[in-house]
Length: 500
Image (cartoon, rainbow, N blue to C red):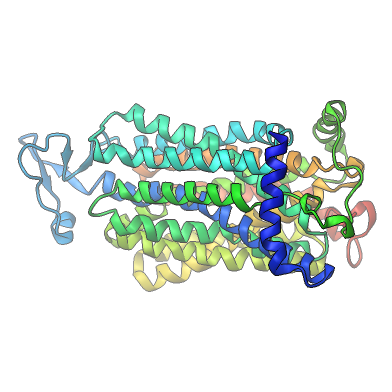
């Protein structure tokens, strides 16, 4: 197996070496650019496959009401949208949607789908960092992408085979969430192997826009078939993820030292530790680091609430737009991409500002402070028309996604290279898994709470999101106070973001 791995790596690297071997510096830059783009596209494809469920929700349950005779009839909104009664014989699929989501408890059922995916993702993330650091990144990530593509497509096959079992869709979502945990620790570790620490906030802010790019592409691709054949809204993204898994297997280079000509590039001597050292590393992170200025606990809890807000928008925004602006599922999905467009600018802005100030926690705190009132304004004026909705989607996307992007990238990298970890190459993957795993608990709770609260009114959902933003801000108060007590750029042990 090791011989096969080395053979493929040498073959892949030799292809690119032919085009990139002008000088050591030029070659290094081009390889870094290639790894930057490849990992960007790999993880964007993961998010591309997560988006269809939010687009298809408006099709799984359409706006309808029951008649006094017990037979469904088309509501006024359905008539305006051109939805007609289904042809005779379609006893499982009605104009109210796709069974079993055509019942009055559809919001709870749709929320359970989100929860099954995100709960499995949260549990799996804690194990993913431990498993991933013991396996070659390329193999581990390839397996995850192929499996994710298969289970994303499996959900869509329920349409073609007329599957109306709620358990089928829950299991497909849960296993998909579990295998997708292979992605984040792998791509962050790979990127960390290739890039240094200079201007980390800007570089990772740009790179983290893959989340928004994947969401946008997923919305547009799923929207192409949502009103005609929603099964393809899952099958096509699943095929894309699987195809990117093959690209990962053929071309991903985990570390500069895997190249035949990498002797001129510096390689850290402490590249690998034995199992005893790995165990010591995990104890350092989970135990000793709690009382050190790294802030793993504070940022993990902050990310929990930040992801709660972000993933509620990810899974429920199209349905909210459908309900408020009375648009069909396709148009609502297209309009929801503006939230992700705002997220791109928010992530880059957070990275630039935190690099300039060298105050990661303060940057996150400022954006969280502005996000809460922005969400209130969004809920108040989004009912006034499309123009107001467009503006608030962009602004809310920037303020909600900025702290989330900064914590999962630059902050995780800062903590993973803390000097108390003594240069361990496995620290970044483990810290990333701890922080993102804790954040994923919030990601699981958000859509579930939205499904439970939304029947009482969308305003209550926004109150829940504002409360979560306030909790995220409170989690960072100690770190913000320490940063603001410093005069000028943070230095030494006082700085969370200090480069070691």
